[in-house]
Length: 134
Image 1 (cartoon, rainbow, N blue to C red):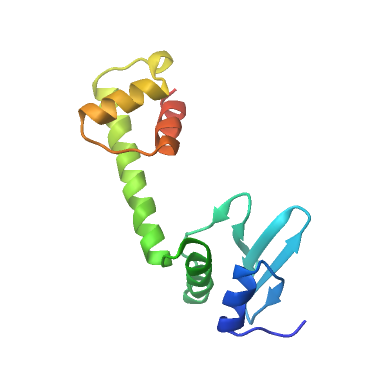
Image 2: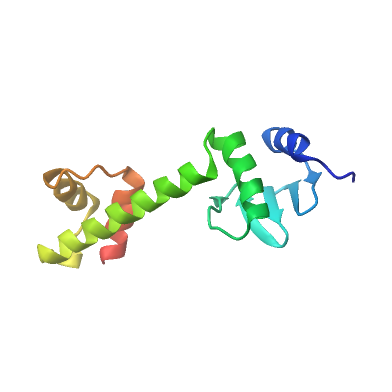
């Protein structure tokens, strides 16, 4: 397989095609589309985009994926994730401070406390907090 440059890589990712660059490759199999930077899995259909920082080169590939699938930069996605983590930590602390018993911490309870404290949570965050608090 020929080596793809960054422009060709972006097109291949958008079209879910196999590609190989200097440090990254993507492959479509029966179980889905996966992209690796060096040996690190940075995208799969099942897990989505791995936004962790590894190197400048990996961040470049992550940026291409973020652009192709989310129309955002990797920095924007990392900032959103950081904001989400902060909201989750804040809500866990509120529930602990309010001495909510874990067996009564349903998604509805989390949503109600979040609303009372003017914290906007996604449904995914609400479910995560409810499960994590138990």
